[in-house]
Amino acid sequence: MDYAEHVVDLVGDTPLVRLGTIAVSGVPVLAKVEYLNPGGSVKDRIALRMVEAAEESGELRPGGTIVEPTSGNTGVGLAMVAQRKGYRCVFVCPDKVSEDKRNVLVAYGAEVVVCPTAVPPGHPESYYSVSDRLVEEIDGAWKPDQYSNPANPESHYRSTGPEIWERTGGRVTHFVAGIGTGGTISGTGRYLKEISDGRVRIVGADPEGSVYSGGSGRPYLVEGVGEDFWPTTYDREVCDEIVPVSDADSFQMTRRLAREEALLVGGSCGMAVAAAVQVAERAEPDDVVVVLLPDGGRGYLTKVFNDSWMASYGFLSPDHTGRSVGDVL
Ligand code: PMP
Image (tube, rainbow, N blue to C red):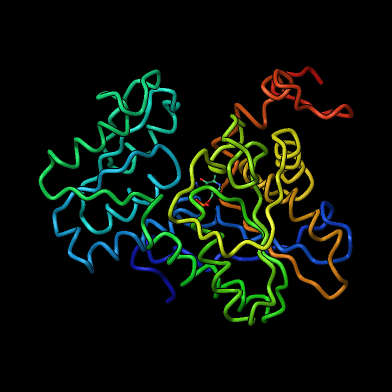
């Protein structure tokens, strides 16, 4: 019999799949499909490692409480790991976060505290202030803080990097990933550079306007990537190149991934693939490009995959002929 004792034991070791119709330059573009993690995203990896590291250091003790300002994938990963290990989870999120997303966290057994969006970060009711206060008030509370926790990039150095090296038989020449906290690109990139003696080129994909590609943090709509500050989890030494990608290109590529490759993934995946296609077009014939797809597309059905939403921002491509729910055929 071959089975896991718990879904948490199934985190990582995700497969690579070659992009067939989208990347046509002849150079293989291999997508690392992170939605196949049990919590549905790449963040399962950091959740597990951050909790383990906090247990090792004594910051998190039996019966403790995990408090984090998050509404997304990191919350799901933490909730899953917390359930396995018997910790309480309290997540703090702004009220702009959809009820569906909050309900996912509650379904895993977490508690969710909702704060007003329309207050500055320093305001006592902001979700940053509330999470800080909860950490002080709750006995045995621990805040992972994915933006400063070294276990975030470390999880990728230990797992994502070695997996890519092994599954490509050491033939990977380029690694492309979006940058949010920077944990994925910094940890994976550092591993791949070390093991290849600097041969693997590390390419960050960034929404136009974010700090990583020289912007000021101007708003963009792709979720989970880009920042308006420099998190300490981002290692500025690792990237050889940063490719800025527009919202329109990110979302159009995200939709192509679903329609042409049957990969229903989130908007940051389309962004990373748009950059990876550029990389492949100027690569050498023997090169192998690996691009990481952080999460699945189900959380974005009312946005990226909705024609009215796309059209309202002018993101639909001029040759768009798609059908939407409700169309009479
Ligand atoms: N895409 C999505 C959907 C994410 O949630 C994140 C994490 N913020 C990223 C990409 C970027 O990953 P990282 O934080 O490791 O840079």
